[in-house]
Length: 211
Ligand code: IPE
Ligand code: MG
Image (tube, rainbow, N blue to C red):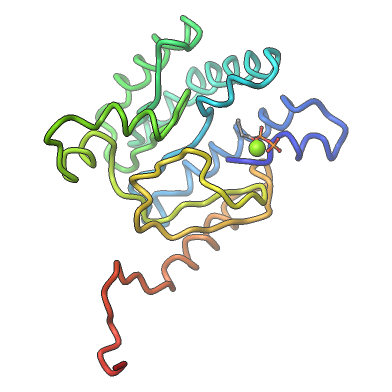
């Protein structure tokens, strides 16, 4: 979910206006995902490196996350959407933690779509926490979460930025210049249909006629 700040700047608005608009894209994408066959959707809302941003933006983002959770839980629950949160919780504003726990509890029965929202998230830190002596691949994947099939990054940058490093071992990548606030059903459909047209080989050779 990248490009909120630049989107707002285009109109001469404060960056937070872009984040607010971005929250609407989150809602759209969550609503539309099940019909496209998406089972798990992981959203990168706030990275552990985002704490380096100006306090005003950080506080605004945290407030926005709180509002989002408060507003969306009922609809998620009604639509079989299970909300989970990944990342550190010990540095979050104290009111956000019970909100997160409540949202996870209230939507735990959801089976249509699993939505994981990454807040204060660092894939490297998650990996470090999952590495135990004797841990094998299965243990680590178990601790972290499912492998990623399709990774979408909006906003024009082409990098991972410490997101799902282990889980993306065989992910297909979709980079789009579209800013996150402009990302909607159409863009999601295009990304998924392009993904479905790709041949995933996982290191194997499928064309046995090739010598
Ligand atoms: C949203 O976009 C990503 C984050 C929440 C934190 P950005 O805030 O990174 O927007 P740009 O990249 O500056 O346009
Ligand atoms: Mg950015």
